[in-house]
Image (cartoon, rainbow, N blue to C red; front, side, top):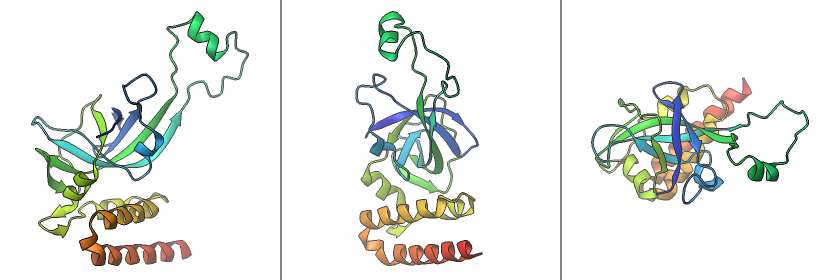
Length: 197
């Protein structure tokens, strides 16, 4: 599993902000594809080994505290490393993560929400394909308890994100092609109808 970053705050019980690790912060800094829109992630949430909140990357923000300070610089970026080694590069990539379920002891328990909060500083790791499959496999049936939650969010990116999720699930769970295809057709139709209003 690829460690992407750490939790730095939450906007609500299901909406977390993760700061992506930059160069030098970890042995293997994540590449942009590790935290692309629609990436499945997990973070420790609970007191038992293997308890985790499962989430979906739904937003990305670039943070630059120097934006708006266009005054002259006395030192260039390369000179700062020599003359001010304690200078901190405070730019960051921040991810919005929507928690859509929970795993207890490494197995899927609930899809739709996680009653336990992930702590500040919790490592966020990319969920392996077999983990995504296990999370969605409810006794041989496709488990999408979070679907209505995502549909209720009034964000223009959400329909495209859901379509991307369905495409990924179809690759991981070919036995569920009919169900996923029906959901995709319904979602595409609903999106077109709402855009036409």
